[in-house]
Amino acid sequence: MIQRRRNDHLRLMIWNADDSSVYREIVARWSREDYEDADKRTAHEKTLEEEWKAKQYSRDRAKAYPELEEQLDLLYHAIDAGKVDKTSDFYKDLKKVKDDNPK
Image 1 (cartoon, one colour):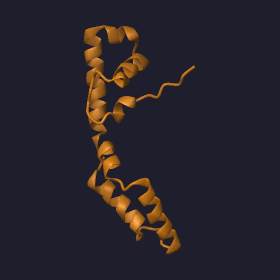
Image 2 (cartoon, helix red, strand yellow; image 1 turned 180 degrees about the vertical axis):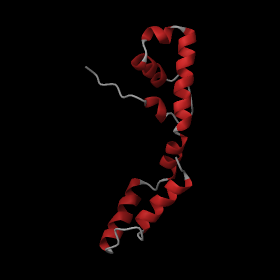
Image 3 (cartoon, rainbow, N blue to C red; image 1 turned 90 degrees about the horizontal axis):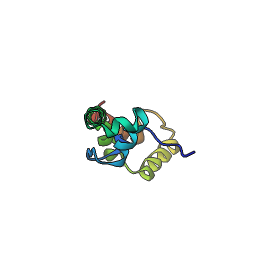
């Protein structure tokens, strides 16, 4: 059996109710019959879009974080300098992203 991931619709960079992740989420949470019923589908799409909008900070953070390789390099230098604490560039850079994109 194939395991379906839930909440894939939250990964959409631009909201698109026609995306297959929206279809899969409606069928997984509610039912295929709900998807085929236009009124129910519209209501469920609205629910999913509201969830998607509420997670905008997460998409903004993902774009703002340094590349993973850069984060690892910053972490290495912090460890090498014995500064794996809030004074390291590693911490400061990630903290800035979180502060600039609050939940």
